[in-house]
Amino acid sequence: MEKGDCCTATQEYPHPFIFEVKLTRAQRIRGLILGSVLVPVRVTLAALFFLIMWPIARLRLAGLSEEERARPVTGWRRWLFHPIILLLSRAVFFSLGFPWVRVKGRRADLKEAPVLVVAPHSGFLDMLVLCPTQLATVVSRYENTKLPVIGALLEFNQSVLVSRKDPESRKMAVAKLIERLTSKGYWPQMLMFPEGTTTNGRALIKFKPGAFVAGVPVQPVLLRYPNKVDTVRWTYKGASWTDSVWHTASQFYTNMTVEYLPVYNPSEEEKKNPSLYADNVQKLMAKALGVPATDHVMEGRVPVSKLGGLSLPLEPPGRVTLSLLRKNGLEAHEIKVALAKMIDRCRSGAQGSKASADELTSILSLKDKQMAVSICGLYSKDETVDLKQLYFSVSALSDFTNFKALLHSAFTLFDQESKGSLSEEELSDLMGAMLGIPQHNTGDLYTKASSQGMLTEENLLRVLTTHPTYQKVVNDYLQPEEAGPQPSPTAAAAANGKAVNSNGVTHGANGFQQHNKKLE
Image (cartoon, rainbow, N blue to C red; front, side):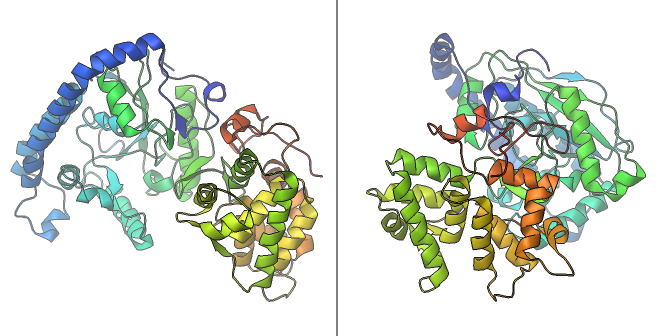
């Protein structure tokens, strides 16, 4: 890595989705003084350039029918408007404190590589890479088209749009991607961030297969910010987009380096397997950056690592819940009593397993409802929680019962027809309850644990406790915490030992590293 760009992941952050701008006292004072002058001026200039772009961007496709808009813009609409928007785009970033961009290597032409894959993805300021790539076409969320200015620029760019809420939209987006990337020069070059979300840049998270589904050559592009103070990043936890704007605009200038690596031509095997293709390009780019390649992904706004098809939370809800309960003063016996109430309610079926924050406050005998709201927020988007999920994810990490007994309890509860076996859907529900987050890909586990089309409790226990992959899941995610003072989830993550992912990179339940306890 270039000097000042990043440090070893395990020394600073438990996982790639956390980032804080770290400033000395002198840097904070200087930033406050400079920021009070530079930020208003720079933000005003950037807003002005955006406002100028807005109507010009709309003019590019004005008067065209839907059929004409579905084809790449050519002729006077391209040679007139494209240079203007490119110049104004560069002016936006210049006004925010990016006076120059250092470019290494050569950008491949459209026929050599129909798509540029860019990483790491640090924040919205990464969009500066569109300037040296001549405003390559991007993929964006459909919801962004409703935003002022941004919607007009996406229309100008003829971006591929996808709605994360609509499965059909995703299928249509993939079909459109394949059509464009295999058009042999008919459509312009595309640019994609295969990580699919922003990180702290201390590792490359698992690449999504979208850029690789067409099986065409790609050109890897590395982004670096070689500055004394790292200000551009915006992540799931920590620095927000406003922090990024303030701290970046408060600097005299910010450096950015764009490096084009040689075009990557996929093998026949990679063409048939986009996931393999994506993994291999991820490893190549991570090696060039000098950072780990991990199996971490953002799944439904929850950071997870992938192992054996399972989604393993980097900050397990059960562990965070235990920490909150202990911080609230609940003793071990009180937690045990509350868990007993939960499982009794789930087994009776009379009230259902869904509980509101008010009900959870009563079950846990909490004085403050806000604690119950916080716990609900770990498991759902509203102020409710599935008690099955809460019970099993917390019990797995407590020392009230052993894993075999807990699995028996879970198997019995999810075997709704008492037939002695689970369907694949029931297995997904069981593993989702144990791990604390929904599981959507348990097919591999189901296949390995099934015998003659039936998944029995005995077979499931055998696979989870003897198969190397799933034994690791149990050891690292479904075993009681070690005795002693309970650290915060972030501190616990940093203090854990090691595990290794399929790329040979250390990671674990709470981050890059994770302890490896033995089955009891």
